[in-house]
Length: 154
Image 1: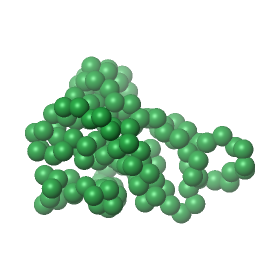
Image 2: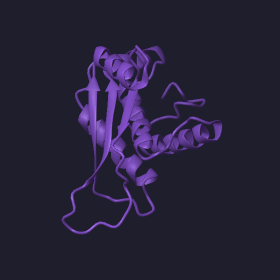
Image 3: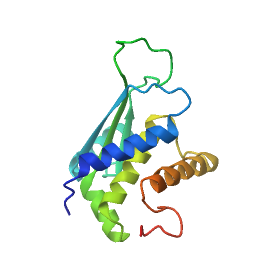
Image 4: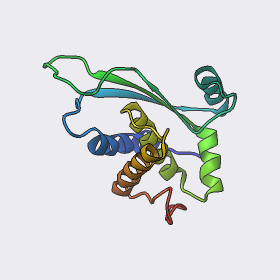
């Protein structure tokens, strides 16, 4: 399953997630890295950084730099971190759920960026808040709710 437009899909997902989640004074000159990895690389990263010896669909690695604050002209952009999407795992998951891979990729990028911005799903309340934000961002991208009744992505 190929995605010729993966860079454009990722850019649209990041732009929309940034508009929704980083509003309220967040620095507009932040950078992130996005990599599409194979399952072997995703498993290696997951084992090294999370202690789980298996691939996962998406990993986020925050840099620790804050996206907010006073910036002067000429200051370098803030590096928020990196998002690694396991392409093979994501393609299998999308096929199994009968979702277009393009929609699933955008969901994973949105999910990863929210983690870089400090959102998580460790508690039930945090998960509800993060999922609601994901659903809103995806709706703006024309992608169905991955958690609700249209989870098969129309």
